Image (tube, rainbow, N blue to C red; front, side, top):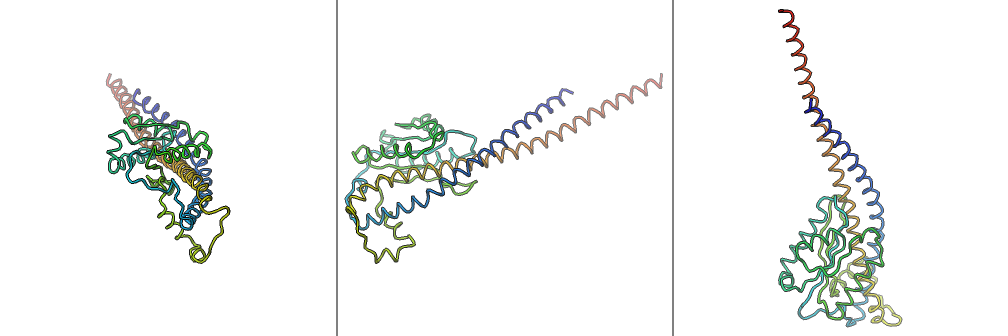
Length: 301
């Protein structure tokens, strides 16, 4: 009978867990819809800004500090966009493994010499890299509790300012790009120095290529001044886009993880109910056998 009681307690506990995971899935689904709307609204704007910058770089030929490539990199800054909360499957660990692999393959000497600085966004990224003795110079815990453009822009503005003053020779951003609810692309993108060749390729790939080829633009005050003003905004938008992509990916990963947890709980509950019925049937059979044996013994007397 104690065995039956233990099984009943486990079934009750699993039912409670199932209710929690189901509720968390619904919350993640609601947040995912909002995150997707913000992300999808930002993608065209970021792409168009990148195209405009590429057009200015092609036409202006300006020698902006953010476009200059150093002869040799001496110090590197890596911005890692994780999450503040867990229960989202391998969302964080998969990205962190890609980041560590990239560091080992390309920047191991910088890491060993203390010339690789990290800025972590999200509690999980902060805890992961500090625990592994990486040089985390700044961390933004609770970042996604109040996700806004101004906070994101301040991070990139500070990084760009330090790059312009020679404190860093390269700035990278690692994040999860939203692909679908159950899939993400883990990227480590170089944002500084700005790759002018890549911008020109993006500009050439737009639908307006034929029109742009024969169109001459008049800039006021001049292309170089406009480029100097728009490049910081372009960098801020790149990090903002990465943050929004990561936020949507996180909610999608959590929704999928909670759905799997709910299904696993249902399967475990079915198995336990089967065991409970088998144990209950065995106990009933044993009681019937004892009653029959007792009745037979009374008859023999």
